Amino acid sequence: MARLKKSTKTKDEPHIEIEESPNLWEKQPWDTAISYEAFVYAYLDQPPPRRVAAAYVRWQEKCGRKVVRLAYNRISVPIHFYDWVHGRDTQGQKPVGSVFEHSKTWAERAAAFDEDVYRKRLAAIRTKQAALRDKEYEAGDTLLDRALGMMAMRPNPTEFDEADVNKHIDMAFKLMRRALQMPTDSKEVMVKQWREALTDAGLDPDTVFEETVNALVEQLEASDPE
Image (cartoon, rainbow, N blue to C red; front, side, top):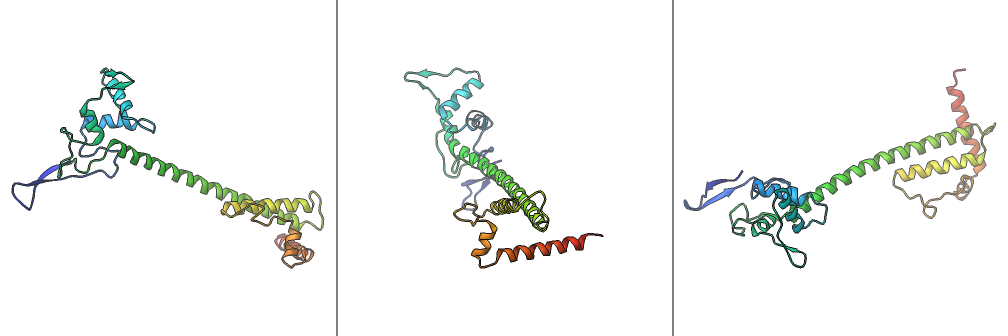
């Protein structure tokens, strides 16, 4: 609430201390109960882009009053309504030192509201994106474990072949790289068969494969209670 307080400069020069809500779409010191209700109901509640004429029509309908319509699809809007819209006093002014000095228009207040809604929605979307990335990474990790398990059983293949292993590894790394927001496009990421990739790196694929299988078999045997 605004309150008067004597200035320290002169006895005859009062000044005003006000508490202004940080959220411009909430009730401000320059609002009256009626003007604020009109702002929220008739203007803020409109979907963008909002229009003053539409706000006035909505307000008149709410109050049970008729709208004066003119030629060429124009309407007559009283000055006091425009004063509300532009945050002005009853004289249509913004006097220095008054609560109206730094008032904001309805358009500015609605824009602040829209920005706040956008930020909250964006934050919610980013939260969902992060959760989805976690699931993608977990799925990729699971596929990679499965592929390694397939490789461990390669000496005695039964239900899968090398193509199955390749497919699992390829999909696993794509999911994990996408989850980490790393490029997955074939032009940016090497998605060749693992034998070709190891050969390009100067390694013998058969040797690497055999060593990997032997290591996994040893791990499986070591974990076998028998």
